Every structure is written in structure tokens, then in C-alpha cells.
Image (cartoon, rainbow, N blue to C red; front, top):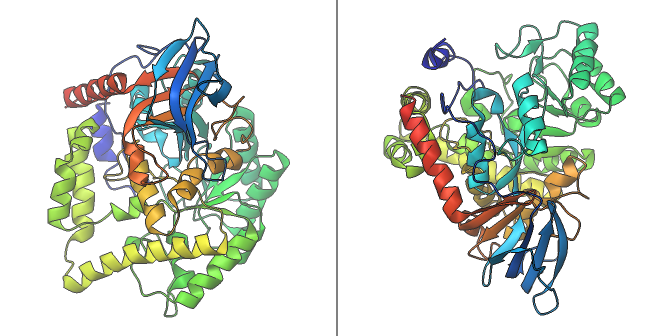
Length: 478
């Protein structure tokens, strides 16, 4: 089937069912140009941003990487560089852990060349929210070093009620089907279970029990039929997005929240600050993690002048023109149709509501992670994480705290804190070399001098070559 036709068939699917992007990239996304991970590499004279939680910058240090792990860290004058090491002069630059995008949708892409866009933007770990067998294959190939990719942590196919909220979700009619679905996903090797809005109370409880028995985390949306307090006490690992909290924070008596109300899900409503504070307290006490994905809602609707700026952004050159014109542009245009001055004022208020909600979560001690929901419209793969980091800072996070949410906390969330997420001896060498100190300016994460993923080094010049290659392939797919 022609891939553009696949896109058109999916055009009217609900939010979240984004069609294929980067159509027919048509390249073998293997080890082309990547350094051998078994080589020894030395970053010489770098300022280390370890993100261990004390805002320390280790000035003028050398980091030795061997066999994909950090073998040594110390002041340059004290650390001898091995004779066989490839030296990377890094004086005046800042070395930090690679970033983790904890909410992406890889199922919408039919070519693993797309995965390079994460590395180009400093993202060395992604959490895939709707699994497929080919994503498991990508994960295995990335792990073995035969695929140029960030590390992949993936859910199985989304589990939903009957009827499902999205056509490609797996509909569960009763507890037996729910238990069977979880068993299948555990046996197939998925890392966690993703649930959706139309699960019944029976199927929700069955999913949670079966996942607990198989030690699989459960993440996703708050099912409409399940009391919110039950969701908070059931043991869910994370709740995705902010839209499921609309009823809990609305100033007036809420109406039922459905998939047909995207404006309300973006928090385009009048809110009650006391309800926000109460919600934040409940979430903090529950221990559930929240992935706000503010950037997705920010990009869902815009006035024509802003939309034109997005369309002319050089970063969208990696997006297939058909998808850009017929889906992204069309979706955002439709969301803004018919809005008068009061409507656009409410759009702006929705952005402020999202920031206020995340600020309240921060103050209450809610655990949060950085995720983008790429490839929703104008949520550009890889690049969008820098916008979301800026959103975290706008909500009151210090740059260091925002970066920890996108590094160390992500590793902690998936149970790998001993393996990655900080710059420390023995950790996996997933590293981001920056020209500017990110603790002083969160925008520094865009100033990338190079990226290392498990010991394989890509200098800025190589990253640019990768980007140009993807741009050309995207243009050739039209």
C-alpha cells in the first residue's frame, strides 16, 4: 500500500493516532559512520555536569570511556590519557548525561532511520508508548549495537475497553481478556503495559493484578469508569499528559470528560487554585509519576501567524511534506477555526493553566518526567525535548532540576539508576557535550558539540551530516 495512502486512511483517527512520518526514508540505519563502541575515548578538559543533585560542575576534568562505560573521571592534571585513546578536546565545554524523552510514539514510523533524529538532538533514551513487534526488533538491534538509535524502553500495544477510544487499541471485554493480554505482552518481552481511557473497572483491576504478578509497570490514561482515587492507589507507575486532570481542577461543576473535548483536555477552562493544590497533594502522596507533555498541547492550536512561523522553521525539513501539509497543518488549522478573541484568550489561558498545574505539582513534591508525545503535530522528533525542558523551567524548575527529570529521574523510574542517568564512574557512556553551561541556561541543551551513546561518539559535524541525510530522504519521499 502506498504510504501516503496509509496516512490518508488514518487522517480522521482521534488524537494520538498519528499517521506515519518520515515516509520511506529508505536507508539502512546501521552503524554507518559510528565509532566502534569498544574503542577507548577521552574527553579532555571538560566541565562535568554530573547531575547527581548538588549543582556541582567539575571544572577542567578528563573522562575516560572504555567499552561503552565511564572508566575514569578526574581533574585533567591527575588522569592519564591512555596511549590508545581517541582524544576529544573539550576545554570550555560541558559534559552531561544524554537526555531521555519519556513519552514518544515510535509505532507511527516505518523506517528506523527516524531514530537518528533523537541522537541528533542529544536524546539517548526513549520510552515508546504503544508497542509493536518491529519496535521490539529495533530495541534488540539498538541494544546489540547494530542499529543507530537511542536506547528503547517500550510498552506493548495499548490496552483499552470495548469499544476502544482509538481504532488501533486492543479492546478488552472482560477480566479474562485483560489477564491474557498482559500475559502475552510479558511473554513477548515488552517492558511495561499502557492502558487507555475506555477500560471498565473490571478490566482495569484485572490488568493491574496481572501486571503486578508479572512485575510489569502500568502507565497511561485514567479510565473514565474508574474512580480517580482508585487509580491513584492501584499502583500505576505513571499518568501521561495533563488532560485527565481537567475535571479535578475545573472551577465549575465539571461535565464528563470525553475524547471529543480536546480543548478541555488542553485545560482550556477556568480553574480553581484550591482544587489544583488538593490534586497536587493527592498525587504526591500516591507516588504516581506524571509526564506532563506540555509541548504537545502547546503545539495543538495556534493563530495563523504563529502557524506560519512553525511551517517555515528549518527544523521541519525532516518531516515528509505530505504529512506536514495534510496532517500537521490541517490539524492545527482545524483546532483554531472559528475562534474569536475570547477563544484565543482561552487558548492562552490553557497554556498558563498547564504551567500553573506543573508548578503546583513541583511544590507538592510530585514525581515528574520529561516527555514530548512526538510525533503529534509540530512536536518535532528529538527537537521537541528542548521545548519541554524550557516549559519545566517556566513552571518553576531550576535548570538543574529540569535536567535531572530528563536524565537521572528517568533512569530511576525504569529501575536503571545504577546503570545510567548521571556522569559517574561505571555508568553507561550516554553523554551530551555542550558549548554552554546548561545549569545557567536551559537553552544550552540545543548547543550540542557532540553526542555519545554507549561509547559511540558523534561530533557535531557528524550529527549535521545525519540531519542532512534525513532531510534529503524526507524530501525524496514526496
